[in-house]
Amino acid sequence: MPHYLDHNATTQPLAVALKAQAEAAASAFGNPSSLHWAGRAARRMLDDARDLIAARFGIEAGSVVFTSGGTEADNMAIFGTLAGAAPGRIVATAIEHPAVLLPLEFWQQRGFSLQLVRPGSDGVVALDAMRAAIDSDTRLVCMMLANNETGALQPVHEVARHCRALGVPLLVDAVQALGKIPFTFADLDADFVALSAHKIGGPKGVGALLVRKGRQLQPLLAGGGQERKRRSGTENLPAIAGFAAALKAADFSEFTAIRDHFEARLLAELPEAVIFAQSASRLGNTSMFGLPGMDGETLLMQLDLAGFAVASGSACSSGKRDPSHVLLAMGVARDLARGSLRISFGPGNSLADAEALVAELVKVRSRLRRMAGLE
Image (tube, rainbow, N blue to C red; front, top):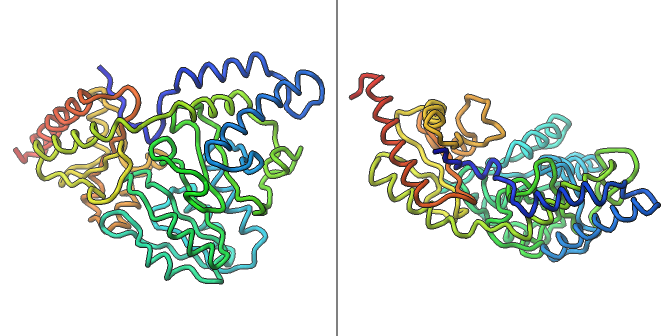
């Protein structure tokens, strides 16, 4: 029996999202920019989706910019802000997703100074450390709401208050937090908030950047001037409709009990296991742990053969053999970081999945130790 336990990478599409996509593709096939009846029908559906998403986050509809996903939303905020700015300081956490870190390195190579603030051993970046790094010469601050690997929640609102006092724009990558913890745009008090649909049961290839009213962006794409000239290109209406439908239905609140049960059973059966960020406030569905002396990629492959889908660090970087940059930033030893796995529960999972995974981990660890001559 397969066990899908990698919902932070992506989650199964919800039935309501698939239905909304199909209905939009069939009934609103026109170009939303066209003036005829087919275009107007598509425009109405696009506006309805935008209104729903805007209402969910307590912002005006014009503040919602549809993108191809979280990566584009992050890049749009970063490039759109820094392209028109004089070189200065950029401040970000050292645990950001590569969709943030790599664009920031691009601007570092073009004369901006980049300061990455490391978290504590609990995976949380200290508020005081962020405040100390941000000054009036700072052009942009980037801080994710919830880490995609450990699930650790970050003090975004407090950092936002400091940024607001200095007039410094703040980008919050909320891709992993969406659907897992409640928040509005006002809660975060950011200038930009990046979202992605496929993390909550919506379609892949669609997301949004929420933009504070009055905040200007240099567009990444030149063309037809869609999305109030901020993102040219015909809107992917079926995916947007699926995103809006998923946003209404997504609920990961029930998985904290399953995660906690998994971790308790894991430590009971394998007491040498190290659960990262366990002492921090975390997303309720997420557990990242390491087994000393084990290789995470080998564990992942063995679990895969047994029907378990898990991750070793960020799925978007899963082709790399390097240890998780998040764990290294937390001060975790490289060998232990190499033996890390991320488990993320979601729709369709139950306590039985947690029990089965622990049982399989015990078997896999024992088998690998025998092969290595350690048992």
